[in-house]
Length: 395
Image (cartoon, rainbow, N blue to C red; front, side):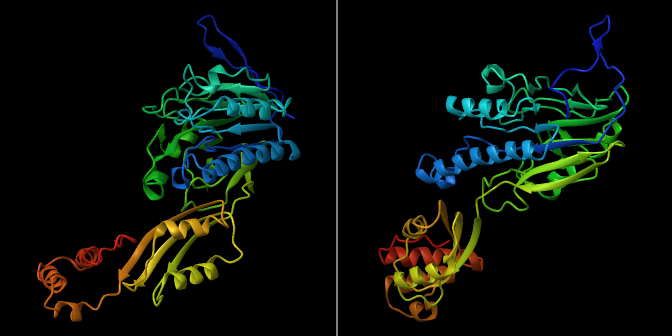
């Protein structure tokens, strides 16, 4: 068992940290998680409604299961790689919950590396909560060492602002013998380009910087897609935050060997089933037909769902996304409905021959030289408007 958090070594006459030579490294187990985002808004689930509150409770439940994993697996430490909570929304109740969860793990040490959504600032939970002695919060925007015992040193860093944090690894060079690993919230550049185009490059780094710094491994947060690289690990967010997130949701149970190599197992802690379904409404003659087709598509499912409506919709069908959302919420904790490749099934050739306003409208649009997709959207929206319809916006 790793002893409770403490700094390794002493200071020299200039006040710089000087590491003691650690004992021979023995095999160490750790549990690592990141990007839980407690008190997330969940705007897609209604933000302040029942569905969003259920999702926020699911995040708390996930943290409880992560703590149980660390305890039951006999881990030597629990690591959090940032974005534990949402700074702008976090509540005093959440502060009490998190403090108690970590305190109940004592004497198991817990190491927290603040991220860009939960930076270490004067009014952060990290600064204000009276943490139990087994909790260590990294407070500086540079990697600093903590001796874990068993010949292992952990280097951790914090974001101290929501943006603008530079790379942690580029200027870091570890000191002392034994095995050195890192904990921080950082964006590996190559992964950002390949997978997470929408993420901001907070504390960016190149993968080879970890080895150049003298670190055997880096336990990270920031990317919500899990990734096991040669010398760094992203656990991904433990509980779904949005649709389209791939990979196993959970924490990483890692074993650090005597030579610094790291064996990783992914442990799923989420209990939420996430469904991303498409509903083809082609051939439906009424709203009731759509509802029956929807009931068949979601039968036996639960959790959260995103439904994409697509297909050729008959003009007479009175279809409203709010009605579909309400129907889904009877069986699911949260539901989102969006319009995909939905086409109004008008006979344009017949309509354009009409000596009517809508016939002239179709002739004008078809003569305007618009791209096919744009012409389809304009025609569908215009024809429905001429009918006085506002039930479903067709893209």
